[in-house]
Image 1 (cartoon, rainbow, N blue to C red):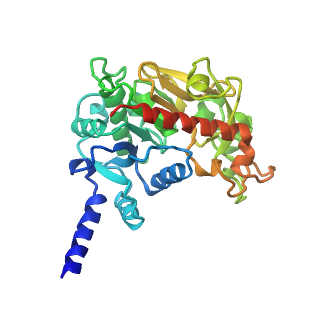
Image 2: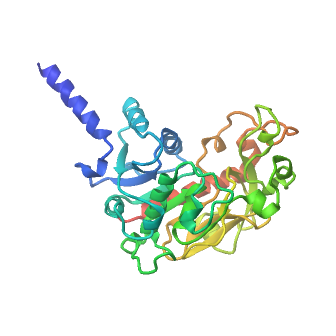
Image 3: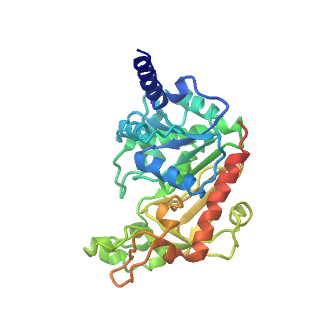
Length: 367
């Protein structure tokens, strides 16, 4: 009988631990929680890799909460199952629900209270990469964007607006006025969304708009250093062609790279890009920290008021940057190499320095 009771209690405990209403339950308020937007299985695996390999160094009392919008297209029951099967007790889930549309993103709306709750009980949030943002969110017609999950963008855009404010509603009081040291960071789409949420706009297609290259044949003629994804895949069936590009960036006069992220200002580290859109008009209180080699693409931004708010257009979170995995190539004429071999020691040092800054910023946030 005791064994049966123990088994029932164990099941109930497990179900509670991996529920999708973490902050609505009795959670440990002595711990520090970092929010993960779009907490798919691959995102959880990425954070596990970075923390377990001491690239993203977190204190022992830090845990992660995946916060997502119920109307997103991804089935987060898969994430819940993954957490259960792997007994990941330091990862949790929180669903957000409500009515969101392009017209109510830049004001208090049905999910504002829920967002404030997760903000109040956390020390930071990470926004990841993903598909194109609906141009209507930043006041443009869709000319070259491919929108597949508008609900995710409504959610992440309003979340970032509630955190930071923007040109769209100058009278809105953002959450970070209460806690200006709170960590907000993002990669690729995460940076684009941060820019849009604060009142910026996007280039909808880099090759077409900036290089007048519309076909794959025209795109691959753009210098390799200024391509931000790999278009050779559209011309060749070579299975070793990578879908991304590893290209150099340059730092601006802003001291984020150099003072905050400890790197030499004259370095041009290679980074991993996989996008065709880019920040155009820069959002409220944002400053550019890095550019592509030709200066046409914004590669990094930082907030002028909130020091722990920053993002990059590239992908420092990709595990293959930090260890030798499959050897791949950019063009059919290349010799296949691993990512660390392509970015070299300078690129590897840069990426580790970037994560060191994220780790340091997280530790500085007051609960």
